[in-house]
Image 1 (cartoon, rainbow, N blue to C red):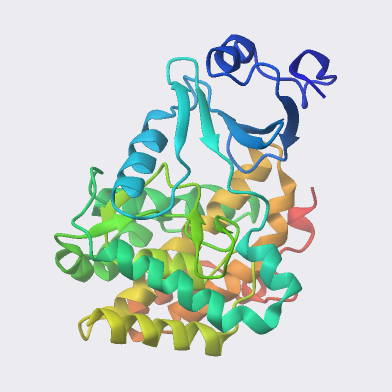
Image 2 (image 1 turned 180 degrees about the horizontal axis):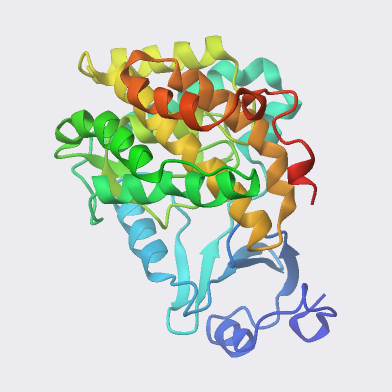
Length: 338
């Protein structure tokens, strides 16, 4: 299918794409739409003889490609494999990218589970490489952002479950839990924030990993991307593998004695946020498929809440979220019927 032959709204290139691609030398390429993700961004694979590329459309005002471009160029300049930028028009929301192919870590491990330990070890090594760098050109992941994110649980999950909860107590509990790690995340490391098996591409070998979906990068705690990888919302990571990879990171990085408890703090923070986001994707954005992930994320959240460092937040959950809504087998119930 050439650009001129795109047949449906889902397949058709966005308005303005043709002149952008022509100027970049890809005007006659065949176009293959790529299924979308949780954002409003759209992707297309372009094919011409002997070469492929990816077109990303992140249209303003809802999207802005500049954070992606800034992070991609910084990562590439520092030896990590983000897609190289072929051409861009930020004002129109177009970015033409290197194509990393179709072998994601997620699908590779579905086919070759015996390689799980090796693949995750390489993913941890990539994080170690990232964390040896000075913090990137990103803003700080501060308490206000942590709290804004965890409030998504109270703002979206609790109402659809018919819960009236203590919002002030919720915020205060998280302030108690997250406060101690703030000093430990300075000067901080680049935090990609969505570092997991569906955003890691395998580039011609298990040790060669390409990075995707890093446009929301901030400077924060080294444990955050470990949580994203090892407490994956979309893929079951065995607990023994999670523990082995966490131990590997701690041993190789020389992390301090508080690192494991901070991992639990950020695990609970991230998982509470994700439950809220997945409900929002359903209720606001009409994407109910993300509800299928909620039982896994809830189970991870419960494990994190069991850590002593999470005691204030765990008490809040015990007082505000009934046990019937915290049962892995029946948590979604009829309330979440799409």
